[in-house]
Image (cartoon, rainbow, N blue to C red; front, side, top):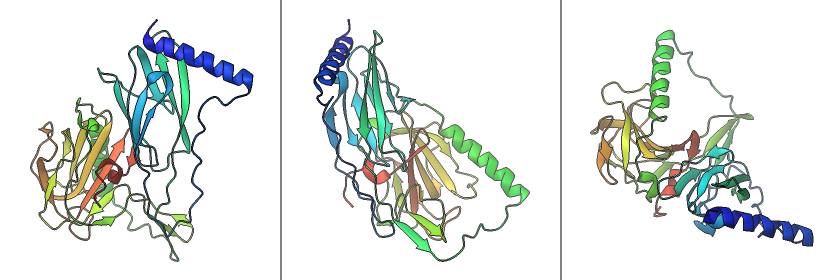
Length: 307
């Protein structure tokens, strides 16, 4: 029997004994924070957690909406899933996962050993108080797009989807990310407007108010999967997407120019482009977005808390 199988079998026995004795089946999950009044709060983030969990599996991360998790599975692990999503295991047993801006209060982390034994634990995902602004005006849909725009936008969205479906084997997901540009944060992740009770789309990245032409540096190692160098996209402008591996992607919007090409491998801190206001932007800034398997993530939770 594998070490993990033995550990999981032992865990099952321990749980059965505790259940018969009327004891708790494990440490209580921390209480969820009380609901917060939107409109006034900044989306605060909890400190990083380090935990030894089921069957010797270890993980650390920021278990909150928009946050992340890195872990190591013991020898003999057949699979690890989070909320039903399979987590690929690297050759050394490490894995990565992340939590959407609107992630539920808990998600099941399940480990399956080589013998088929499985055990789950519920991870408490801390909610956050997003910056919400209610305005007493009707939501304006904007001008009706014409046929040319619709066709062009469909092609752009197809390219973005294809870029985020690639797996280059990059290992930047293992790194603590660095800031891609200097400047104040002018747009917060998760911020949203409510128009007379009708929610608008929330801000799916952060805006960094760097000046026109400021350097954009790779926040972590990765592979370029999309570089709109010649023809800017209608909304994103000169868009660059990096694959950091394990389903984690960075996107950089509104660039003035890009200095890397699709297929290029980049290292953390390498120059990849310059700040601009291409696409739909009212001034020069960098919009940096992170996604994992379609989940929208808060870039601030992936870098050192320097601002």
